Length: 225
Image (cartoon, rainbow, N blue to C red; front, side, top):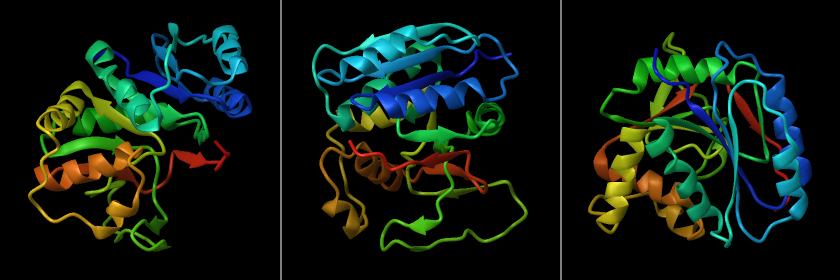
């Protein structure tokens, strides 16, 4: 049996958001008892976030709190969370304004079993989109009898990466994020703090895909911050 994927929470200055997510995690269903939990806190945030993370009791494996001394900003912070694949092999990255289904970890295990070694797959989403991001129109994938579908869109509302998937992206970044294929115009309007903007361009340039569930395993509460 492969090592249990680590749950990595990205937090900063929203203590109530973190509290809600941690409560949801305690109510989820886990088939393993050796699950690492990492709470990564960007520097310069609310002291209550650190206190809450430190005092939280995780009963399903080890817990680690990483409090960064300086402020990365959203993009670099998520990238440091992805870099934890080098330690854990597989990570489930969840930002603090999300809620998770009780079955999110079971989905992660099963989707990794199916897609971790598929070369064309660069990540797995916990979230199922209902709108298209190029115009916020209603979106519904074609029904083909499958539990998942693939898109050249990255997910930022709960995502799973393996060490190999993440290292492919980091190698592309290290080469200067070379872009020689057309990418959607709407991406150019996104903030430079968006890691997702870069990852979508990576998917297009390298002809890779994200796996999406048909039924969402996360939701976003759209908390300010």
